Length: 91
Image (cartoon, rainbow, N blue to C red; front, side):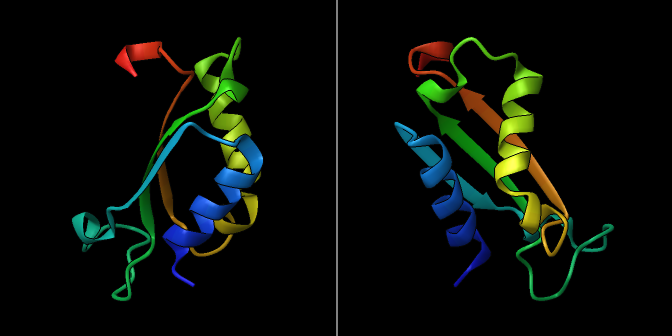
């Protein structure tokens, strides 16, 4: 299973998002720390979920990092997070 699918599945299970997009940006980091020729090292996540209601940006990131702890301690080198509640920021 591709790492982007693993990330998507875990975030779906943890947050039941209204929308979720996981983008593999590994190709943009060739020559940077943590990059591997096989890719699947650098990701960007766009997620909209009621689970983030009343949470600060830092708390939202901590929640996502906790859900993906195994991946972040293993093959995922970088994760950019855009976490919002429905209706926030034009969503």
